[in-house]
Image (tube, rainbow, N blue to C red; front, side):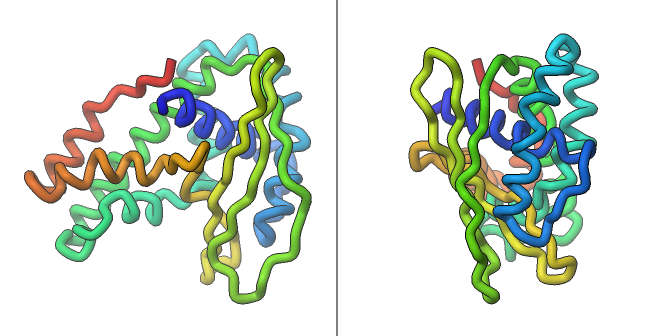
Length: 206
């Protein structure tokens, strides 16, 4: 499972780390994926010698990836059925802790980048009433079996922009995995205990 999560996180980095180098069309999830995927691998390879620097890797994640992640929606999904029992302040604190955890995890993955290539699925039309769209793509790495992943994207109706909120590999959802870990803590000890747990989690992505 750790390998799948690692691959999913790498895929997220791969899709969005090149986003600051070209104007990105966020009005269509397939165009977004295709447009960013074109330039990503070459950009990572060009800076591969700097990726082992955790400070640099973290800056890439914070400036090039997280703006394209719907971290609030993802955080609320992790909180799950206990969401209505939390206050606005508690939700904000949890979202901040979850954001920091994701930055730490993505930074760890980015610093281990090698020669992966990503291939998005062909662009498709999007139904006018669609708010959630899965975008499939393939990760290719020399000497290893191809891995098909699904990038789940959500439409923000206020901004008309699509953002990522989940990644699925081999039927394993990152959000579902994290919810199964965090939700029992919220139910038994409260959301503040879950926030503390997130702050103390160390990514195990080797």
